[in-house]
Amino acid sequence: MNHQSYLFQTVNVITDRPMCSMHPEHEHLYDPINYGYVSSTLSADGEERDAYGIGEFEPLSNGYRNRP
Image 1 (spheres, rainbow, N blue to C red):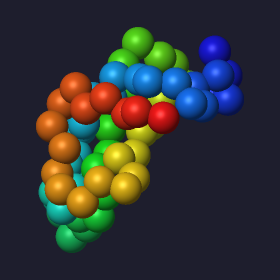
Image 2 (cartoon, helix red, strand yellow):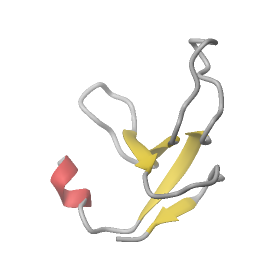
Image 3 (tube, rainbow, N blue to C red):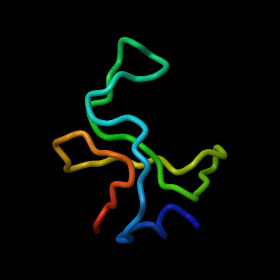
Image 4 (cartoon, rainbow, N blue to C red):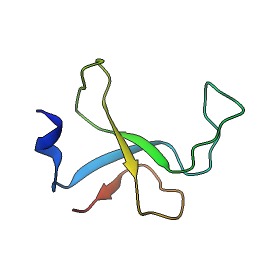
């Protein structure tokens, strides 16, 4: 699936780094938004597709469902 096929779809996002958590590789950086990936997908780099919890103002837990 290309990235456009996910527009306006409900997807299951696995949250790797909740909002305001420290970056795992760069200890002086924190993530200002919820960051994770869409499960059961692959992007061009061979990893799951990145996902951001935009419009959410609290840390999200795993299994957050993005509603279009």
